Length: 251
Ligand code: AMP
Image (cartoon, rainbow, N blue to C red):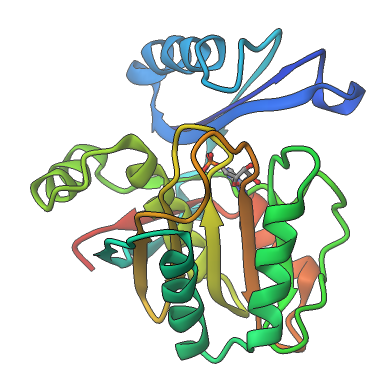
């Protein structure tokens, strides 16, 4: 039997009462691993580079096995950018190759670099016009209910390829779910953690890890999902927030 466990943490009270988002994480696991993981997530919220959370919400939910969907893990390629300009140029190239317009890419980049407060989730943009299509405001769409099908095996494989960072492990799960969603053709992400400057573009079945995507010490980061024109945004949101997805690195 599987459980979904999700953690959200903020400073200055709950998110809905104006608290500043500090940290969030989610995974799927068995009953035996629930307590250890809950403890680990609480520690993560209390010791974050963005500050100490004073509000932590843990949600634990049982998952019906028959509702679970399995998707392949994206392949990973790493690109060492000399500086921010080169990193952003790489990102533009990978997104354009997937059919995303330069206008949409520029709008997404501008959006992510201009954010005044941290978002918990992602924005959804039309891949041609760059118009924002979700109506979630400063919260964004939060992707949840996902994990590796076999976490130990998947992490071993990633570690063997040199991808040892937990950021990458979590992001590859999220990116694999997002790119499997109906209508999504690409994603652009860099973290809002001030000390983590690596970002990625996922598109065409590949997670392109790019080593320089934002200035060190900047806490402006986020995610943009690019969708084909005509995508049903409600169905997409339902999939991203509710569909339980396991990512299988053997597919
Ligand atoms: P992180 O890579 O965890 O530092 O997150 C960077 C940014 O990505 C956050 O500020 C959010 O805007 C976005 N983000 C993080 N986790 C999720 C998620 N589960 N679903 C959608 N967006 C997310």
